[in-house]
Image (cartoon, rainbow, N blue to C red; front, side):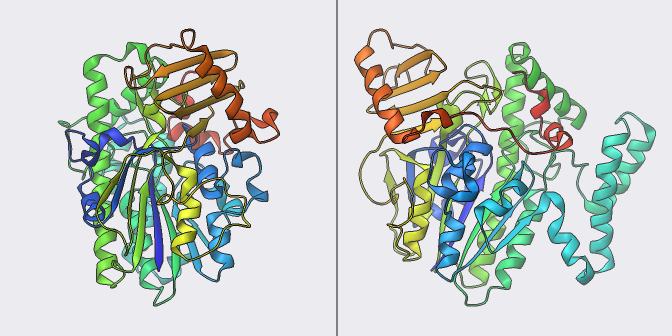
Length: 452
């Protein structure tokens, strides 16, 4: 059996039609659900990539501290003699290259794939790649209102058929092209492939060829909205918030188009039936739910409740409402390849085994305080330094009013169990990691525009 893990950055579960959203933002996922399982209560173990991705690849909560020391999905599957590969783009993707231990690691954000393949490309493909690089340079050096910028943009559109890409990551179309090329070369060899799409990540709405839920928002206006939401979230009006959501949803619909191309390719190669697909996200996204936008904020549910859909050859359509967490991905993928994991220090459990379990999440942007969250039996506990909050999710699903004082025994129970489960014997390890990416990249992704 083959397995493909697909993650879409910053995708919150409640913005998918499959999870009750009013818009069908990602209809491609219906193909997975036709024979698959939907997990309605799946949670990321961190509210941003730098914590979440290492956690689900190692099935450990504090993996960002010891990534090079821990076995991963990639290393475990590779040790079993199965080909492994990861294809992704930007958002610090390259920092995981050594630690995640895949046989092949393609970071499209650094043009690695295209530089290596350029010698086999024709003049049109080389022109396209050269135009992208020129556009990146022009976008950094020349103001948008400049006549030179407008002339360069028209030339760029003529070559690539897209508006100028200022988004700081490679598009889902290019990522899917790369994945399809890789699949075509595999033959009958068993494989595990991880694909990480960026379309849920800000800046939103930058694909001019995407099906839009908005009426023509200019790139200049998109930049303004991104900056305002990041630096002065309280000043974002209700209408501007709706525009941000429209742009976000449009990017999801665009990503869905590319997922359909990937699924079509699997069918064309006769791989669809024999390939297990697991779809999720590394974290969600905030739209003012708790006073902020984007992510890297505190682990409220809008940032850690993620979609999780699986399709395996043995599955029948099913919905599982019991809580699951993303550290469960590693043992599940290994089990699909018939790999024993008893000797691996995985903390997760096969998604298809066991009943309800407690879930945990850690970390927040720019906080040097200990930040933890846990969900159990209808309660949500959130600790930020010395501040403790407790939410009754049945009566307060938006986590708006803490009832910690009224339920001190529940708070005490969480405080006892978290060190045992989360920190093992070293609670002092909990410190939000620094992102090891250059400032230009952070600015392109909007992180330097977010207020502490």
